[in-house]
Length: 222
Image 1 (tube, rainbow, N blue to C red):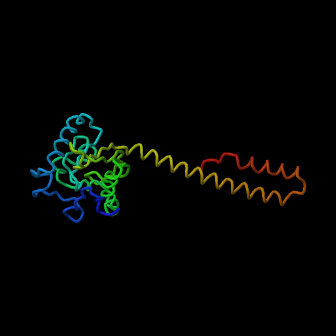
Image 2: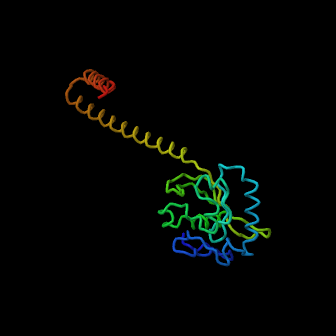
Image 3: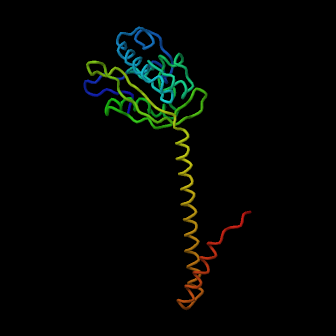
């Protein structure tokens, strides 16, 4: 999906001011300045932040239509390492990984929220110190009293440990599948060799049982 999030009569997403969209802007028309167009959004964000500020595990980020931060709660500070004063007026793309920024994932997430009313946010993000964390949450459009989209609300939690557990489990399952495949390959080889060495069915079955018993023996630690 490209950088243009407009559809029909829907208000388009402004392009970022800088090449990567992460620099702070303080000129007129920016959420950091007294922009009347975003006044309702800031008011909504402040109310939401006041209600949920006690939930420090939840990062709650309000954005204007251009994807720039208008509210950054304490949960977002704890998860990302960025203070609110560092992020207000900057693009939330800053916490996306370089590969996701290059692929347009951030803008695509905003467009998906506009198109579907919600966009899942389940991916790796960047902290201020450069380390990565797994965010689990969603991006939602923020509407004014007349139902017009005035911005976005991005909420997520740090689920890094749960994600690492899933990845460890997947690795273990992959290793188990590989071992089972190797074992079955060994069994096929044993069957083929045994079939060539015996002339009677009874002898064949006995030979197979002996070979399988040998494969089942525990391997002595090296």
